[in-house]
Length: 78
Image 1: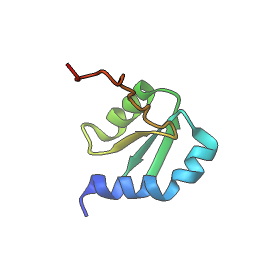
Image 2 (image 1 turned 60 degrees about the vertical axis):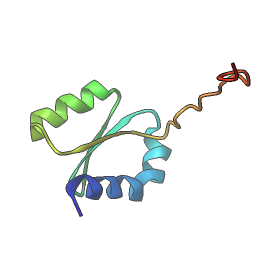
Image 3 (image 1 turned 45 degrees about the horizontal axis):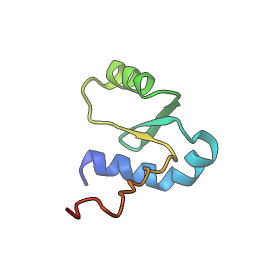
Image 4 (image 1 turned 180 degrees about the vertical axis):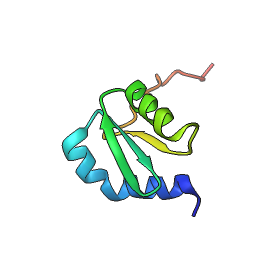
């Protein structure tokens, strides 16, 4: 398993716990360890680069669904 796949598996295994406590924040995961949660992406990136350089590591936004794009019915009908 490549490292990012491992980190994403950690995220998925802890998703419910993270969403319950940290929705709207960002989680930083390196290998099989959750390094921390952060209020902003910039905060997470700053710590990630300081501790791990260029990576790899996973930074994921917690619990916010991707908004759906709703197109009008006439879109592309011309």
